[in-house]
Length: 326
Image (cartoon, rainbow, N blue to C red; front, side):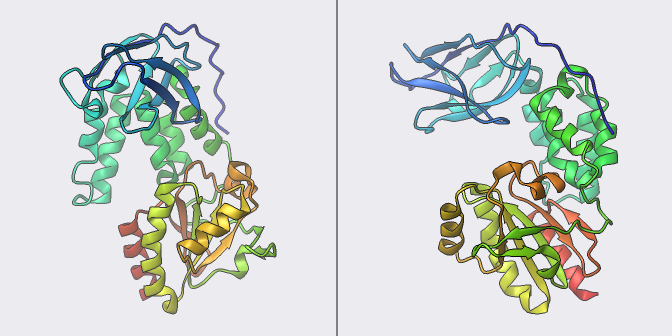
């Protein structure tokens, strides 16, 4: 178990003073919490200037700053200190933002993933590990660790999580990692999958073990998640190509509306197996598999062992082809 002390509530001294170049007076800008969801605060633009004096619920936060119609938006890494936003001579999305440790590291993070499709997995992991080790005081490092936790496993994720100071560990992103570390049910690479039972589209309960194929992709998604729907388009190609050779896909949705769930399946013509308890993030299967974002996936071989997690489209294709050779 990984248990860390809770950070005491802190008084925020955050502010964001900004300038824009093409937003009309009377328009409003909004902070959207990118971890917990919801709008944190809003500010009116006057003479291409605005200011937020938000009392942050956490000392450091990852948010999106956007106009009401979202025609202009940019991700921000907030810290409980005065920050500046300057888009007076630039596009809104290219604004110069200062005052936050994580914000200063945005370009460095981009460099980590530069040419990611041309370098080896080992080289990419080396870059990620070096970034996290070199920047333990930045919230953006926690996001990176969270995104790779499924591939790195609990032991390695816990090793790097211990490097973060208490304030970072206790952030919303940190707590998401902690929930993964404290969940002993999550199948790790090389381990047998955890069986479960959920209703299908007709309300009939189905056991996962009865739906698996020679190779099984356990896919977590949602009809309201655009990245999920984008990945579904790629999965359709893989399914058409490899179903006859033994590939099966079982999709678990975090939808809460049965109507939306079925409508999306039918509209996008998704032919594989679909299950859902319609319990959103609170579903037991989501919890037992440590799923904190969609899309997520587990690739399972014919022996029922996990051989991949959160694989990209190209990685899925490569792994499926290799597994089908055996």
